[in-house]
Amino acid sequence: MKKYHLLVVVFFFSLGMSAQSAQSFLLNLYGGYTFSDRVDFDSSYAKVEDGFEYGIGLEYFIMDNASVELKYNRLDTNMPLYTKVAIINGANTIPAGTQLNAGDDKGAINYILADYTYYFGSSSQKALPFLGAGLGVAILETPKSGNGTYFAWEIKAGVKVKTNSPLSINLNAYLQSMSAAVGYDYYWDYYWGPVAVTDYASTFQFGLGAVLSYDFSK
Image (tube, rainbow, N blue to C red; front, side, top):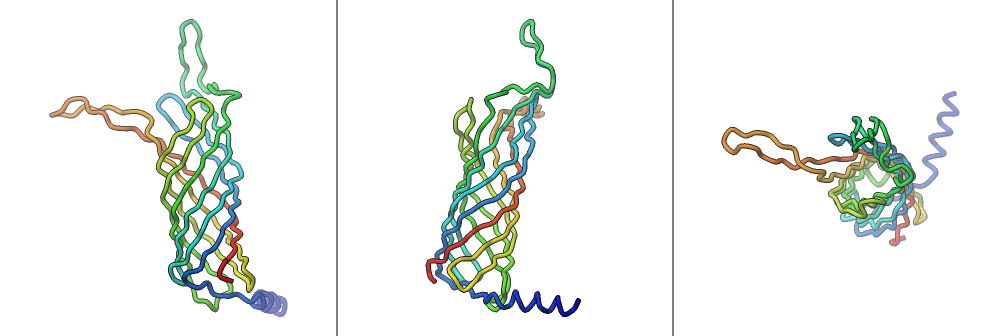
């Protein structure tokens, strides 16, 4: 058994990993699976269903172990909206749990993010673990409300595997969030009386993905 383990180690070392040099430009192609999330409102809730997320980015290495990137990702998904409680509409009553946008719930989330990524280890390593985070905007497309632009962020972690060719691949996990103002909550202040505070709703979607990179400096 030890001999087999040794053969596996020798095989991966033989892949010939190369260091990423500063001032390198990379073209990144994204593909991943993003899991669903539930967003609660006062009298209803929405689901952002799971789906395939894809995109493209330009990554620039400011030093050997750190890069900045501008990227665009898109998630095509369904966003059904359900009632939490029964709604009385004249002589009709809409039961709790009824989907309010049945047949009209397709939409998309477009992320435009500026990322910073730090790669751990030295150039002699075969694979480089990394951590990263990004800030930007999410453009939400919905059939009834049109498009809206909201604050968005993400965090990510994974490993970058490089070869002697210009191609490399990243395997990563990510968490993306989008926040939007959805109305006001009110509370009573002793000096000021009723005070309105903006109420926000946020999505938190976890995903697993891969990134195929092409290094223009090679």
